[in-house]
Every structure is written in structure tokens, then in C-alpha cells.
View 1 (cartoon, rainbow, N blue to C red):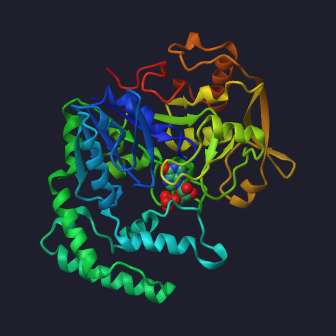
View 2: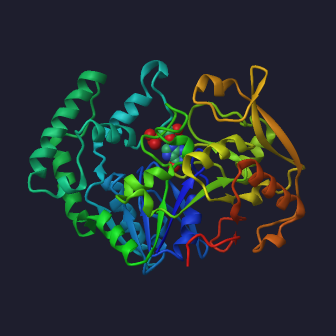
View 3: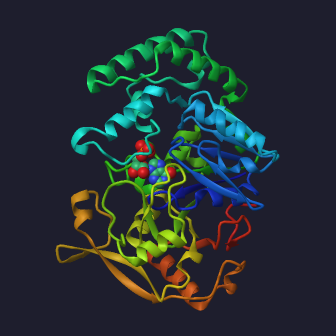
Length: 430
Ligand code: IMP
């Protein structure tokens, strides 16, 4: 058997969906282990684009098994729509299973997320996706959440009614908020979702365990990225789960020794959605060039992404937090046409150089990037299928990036299509 964890090495949106889709060809089981429909993974197959939010990006590989792990939070209305849309596409699909221990997003989680984001003064504004992710994890850790298995339970109706009444009352008293769905509506809707979800629900920890024991290849698909991790990210501008590689063990229900290889996905530049400091951000025409050329608009919210140069301080940090074995560099084609390309190798903070990613946001906000400048290239690389097909300047950029990050490059993506990838190694052991 062999297992690979695929994690975002930056602030999310690194192109993990595309990489997962590529690696899924070799995998038998693909597991998502954290987050929910705050994620948006785009996969393009035979000219058709699929935007996935909850279902693992391996779903477009018939014969495989996809798992929504226990570490996820599920909005059943979104999941039902996604499953129905995939079915309507007429494509053969992988089998899908949902962990009975995953938590359920309820309408008041979404409402609470909105209200917090709109709080007067914006004191608590994170720039969330407003999908109810944070409030659902709050309830999970406060031991007030609803797991999928609880939704299927005989006592679900009464439990839903009590929870909905209590939460709606809290929303009213805390925020003076009206407009919440009536408790009886929540009960009716969620009992209907329970019926829809029932055939997919399993003890998925056991399913993954058995796959590993049977010598199958398992791919753990991270969402968001290292800098959005609740522990290791740029807190409080983070998501409420653990995208880092360690989260794969907890969120899929396997022991850490099951993990063989960790692959970090990074864009050839950096992007960020939502608030918080971003040292290499470009608020000039180069930033706008990256946004337009890279179609940097959120898959989930449509928000324009903030764009900047590649930051090797972040990559080194991601390498440490995740034990990265390899980097997959995506969107290298987007840099084509820039006369020079820059990589941030360190930060300057109050006159001194620092090479480690700071934990204090006030420090990060004051950090100036220290750049290395390399020559750009003008050749179209979207047709490159081997390392040697890349122009010398692009190869030099990749090798300097790997040197500064301290991690070898294992894959390079040169366009959105499944075939537009250069694989430099095999991530699953044979
Ligand atoms: P939440 O996950 O909706 O609570 O949002 C928290 C922060 O994570 C916000 O800055 C979001 O923009 C960011 N975020 C959440 N999911 C993604 C993602 O898939 N890609 C990029 N940023 C994300």
C-alpha cells in the first residue's frame, strides 16, 4: 500500500483539485479530511469544467472510491445539489461515501457566519466564505454539534427541534436577528436530507483502514492551505479546521504512521482571499496581470483574489509544518510574458532580515519582502509535457524555488487541463 497527503502550501486556491484529479488516476481511494463547501476545486475534463465544493476531486474517476471524512462539516443542501449535478452530467463517477462522524451545517450556522461578518465596526470580520463553516466547527468543539449519524438516528427529529429552537433564540437575543428559518422548517428539511444521505453513510475510518490493509493506494485531499490552518495559519484570518498534513490523520480517522508521502501544492506565485497581511502582495499592474492571466477570482464566492510574487519564506514554513516531500508547482504558464520574475527569499523587519514565518500578525504586517530577481520567459509553455520542454528561464525559476523552499519539485502544472502536467516523479510507491 501507499498513501499520499496532498496539502496546500499557501493560502488555499493552489490548484489542489487539478492535482487530486491527476493523482486520482493512480489512487484507489480519495479522502477529503477537513473543511466543507468553503472549498472550491475546479477540475476540467474533456473541455468540460466541474466545480466541486464538498465531493472529493477524484469523483470523476469511475471505479474509484471517494470519501467525505469525519473531519469535514457538511451542508446537506449543497451536497445533495452537487451529487445531483454530477449525476446529471452523465459522466461515469466514482463511488461516494460519507463519514457518519462528519458534522452537519445547519441554517443558523450560515446565518451566524453572515451576522459575524457584518458586525458593526467589522471587529470580527475575517472575510469568510459565509458558508457557516466556522459556526459549525464552534458547535462541534462546544459539543453542541450534530453529526451525520445523529441525523440518521431515531431521535433526530426531537434533537433537531431542540437545537433549532435554542439556536434561533440565541441569534435573536445576541444579534437581534430575524429572518431565521422556523424550527419546524429546519426539522422537515433536515429529515428529508437524512433520507437522501442515508445510502452514502458509512464508518469511513474503517473503510480507509481496510483499503490500506488490502494494499490499496489512498490519497488524502486537503482543502484550503497551510496558512489557513487553525493552528499554523495567520490566525485569526484562517479557516476553522486543520488543512495541514497532520489534519489528514485526525480528519480521516487513521493513525499518523499510515501516511507515506506529503505533497505540497503551490502556485508559481501567491494569492490570498479575504483579510490579513500578505507581504508579497502586488497592488500594481503586475498584480492585475496575475489576476487576469491566472483567472484569480474565487470558485466559491467569485471574489477577486489578492495576487503577489512567490514567497519562499511561506514555502519553507509549509515544508516544516507538513513534512513536505515534494512540491507541485501550478500555474507556471501564468508567468509567461513577464520580463522578470521575483521570489521572496526573506523578510526585512525593522532593519533586520528574518527567514522564518512570524506568528505575530503585527510583525508580518510590517515585513518587507527581500526579493531575488530572475529572468522571465515569453515562450508559450502550455504544451510542455516534459521538463526539457520548458524554456531555460522557467527551469531556472523552478530550481531556485526548490532550493529556497528546501523541497524538490515533483510536478509542474502548465494549464488547467488534466493532460497539462509534467510529472517528475511517482508519488505513490509501487
Ligand atoms: P471560512 O473557511 O469560510 O470560515 O473562511 C475563513 C478564511 O479562509 C477566509 O479568509 C476565506 O477567504 C478563507 N478560505 C476558506 N476556504 C478557502 C478556500 O478554499 N480557498 C481560499 N481561501 C479560503
